[in-house]
Amino acid sequence: MKKIVTICGPTGIGKTGFAIKLAKRFDGQIIGADSMQIYKYMDIGTAKPDAREIRQVPHHMIDFLEPDDEYDAGQYARQASAVIDALDEKGTLAVVAGGTGLYIRALIFGLFRSAPVCGQTLSRLADQAQEKGGQSLHDRLRECDPKAAKRIHPNDIFRLIRALEVFESTGRAISTEQETHGFSNPKYDSLTLGLTMDREVLYDRINQRVDIMMNQGLLKEVAGLVEKGYSLGLKSMQSIGYRHMGMFLNQTVDLDEAVRLLKRDTRRYAKRQFTWFRKEPGIIWLNPSEVQRAEALVKQFLDGRH
RNA sequence: GCCCAGGUAGCUCAGUCGGUAGAGCAGGGGACUGAAAAUCCCCGUGUCAGCAGUUCAAUUCUGUUCCUGGGCA
Image (cartoon, rainbow, N blue to C red; front, side, top):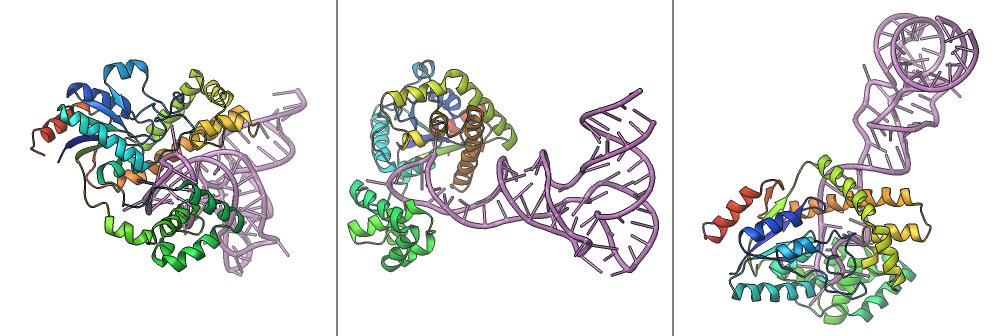
């Protein structure tokens, strides 16, 4: 199995710098695993690696989509896989780095096979959810896939829609598909390093980073995107930072409040990431300062003594 | 020094006509299989400032001490 190194952890903890150090040390290249850094023109708010950093180590899966392009974890897994395979042929180490847990999981284990998301079905179901509420979708799901209905809360519209979509387009229950798949067949042998630190310290860093983003011109970046015609309703524009600046531009809140909410929502996001990664098996947790230890671990791993 | 208003959850406060208390914000835990920076679920015990008194019972009433605001000197 191909070996890769994966760096994960919450937002703002220093994954970018850490991954660059490791990649340089082992002559590797970085594969982003971030569902927002994939978009062009969204630089400040996504804390995308800057030009100087990219010059140090080649980056992939970053900065290659228009903000209104459709994208999903399945496409990510396929494309990132192709990049890793190409690097592998040259004997170059792939360092996957990012905070989108689902992308990392999809890359390493794949997703269950099924028809890809169909925009039509999706929006039709979304309309129905709007009209009749989540409960009606839940009722329908209970009929065709009671197991899934049991696991999905009636308010969790996204998951209800997906489950119904899978049933309607394949005739099979998502619960069965998931059980069969079970994330049980890794496609890569990954040394996964999770970055962590004291929660309070992280939160301080996050607050400070938001202030820095504001100084760097986050508001201008978002206003510029709107001017270019990218609607605030876009998925990308509803991400952290972008939606907050949008709220200010809409005059829903004043700037202080927008920044306050931006900090809070970033903190909450970091918390959710901890929840996700905590239960991922096999992660070795490190403080971002432990670069030497990480290097030793990678060396061991590559030497096959893992 | 005197007068007034306060001291209740991390913060801002509500409340108990005496039967040990609850909102908002913040925070915590969890879920997650092709939208995932999204989406969703759950979580409030805190010497009710300290001490003493009245009472079957005090965070609630009384006294006193301390602290914080404001006013007068």
